[in-house]
Length: 159
Image (tube, rainbow, N blue to C red; front, side):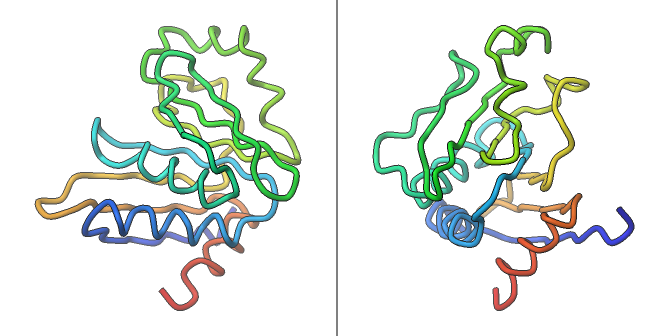
């Protein structure tokens, strides 16, 4: 794709991270693959939790560190599959979870630590790179598809 969009954001605190996740969730009404990269404590799970709750799930959103993936029913008759691959030893392990079926034309997949499953994951619509800043978090969002570009323009039209 030649017209990749990139957005740099500074998020002062957890409230701003959740607010951005909510804004993304409110605009996203289709399937989507979002890779969440960053060091421990950079905000990946906070963003994922905010997205899932703003997408219509009203239960507790837990980090799937030990289960690798947690499904959440969300709006528009979709499921959000939240992956945390931190403890993944080999991408082949994902085969046993049936994960390939989760990347489809209906559902949303949020993948933390995607580098642990290189060669297994499909192409992403967005790559979100979180990093620590002395007073908050930096976030760089790279859109890799036309669907991703459309969402980027919707989310950040007046941001």
